[in-house]
Length: 215
Image 1 (cartoon, rainbow, N blue to C red):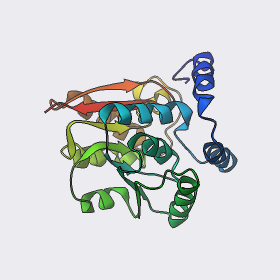
Image 2: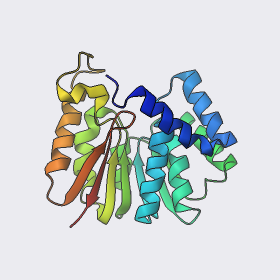
Image 3: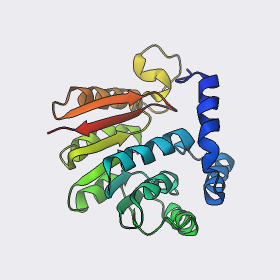
Image 4: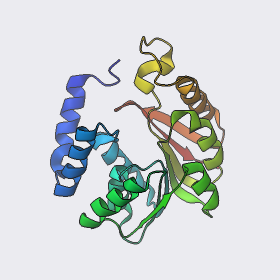
C-alpha cells in the first residue's frame, strides 16, 4: 500500500535534494547497496525542522543504525547540542562516527552500543526530543519509558507508525514479524489518548508520529 501517492513522493523528494552533500549521498548509497533501512530525505528533513522549531539541544534516539537520522539532528542542534545514539552493533557505531565526523556533525554525538531501552534507562535527565526507531515489538515499552522524560514542550517522535497500511486492518500485506502490527497500533492509540500530549501522524514514508508534551 502506498502511504503517499508516488507522484507526490517524487515531487517532495526532488525538492529535498537541495541537500545533496557528499557524505549524505554516501550514506544513502550505502543504504541502497546493503538494503539498510534509513528514514530517507523527507523524514530526515522533517526531523531537522522539528528539532529546529523546538530549539532542541538534548535528543535521545532509540535505534540509530549508521547515523543517517543523526545527520539531521546534528544539523539542527549544532555542535553545542547533546545527541545520544543507540545500536547493538559496534560496526554501526564506527560507521556513524566516521560519516558524521567527515560531515563535521559529530561534535554533539554520544553513541552508545547496547539495547536502546537499557541505555535510555541508564542515561539521566529529560530530553527535548525522544525519537524511536527500534524493533517494532518494543514500541509500547519505548513509549512508556519515554513519555515522562520528554520535557514539557518537547517532542516524542517515532517512525513506521502506519506500517505500510497494516495498522488499518485493510492491508493484504503479511506482518514482517508476528505481533509487530499490534504493537504499533497499541502505541498509536496510547499516544493519541494520552492527556499530556497532542499528536498527529504525518503520512510520509511509513508514517511518523509527532507528539508534543503539553503538561
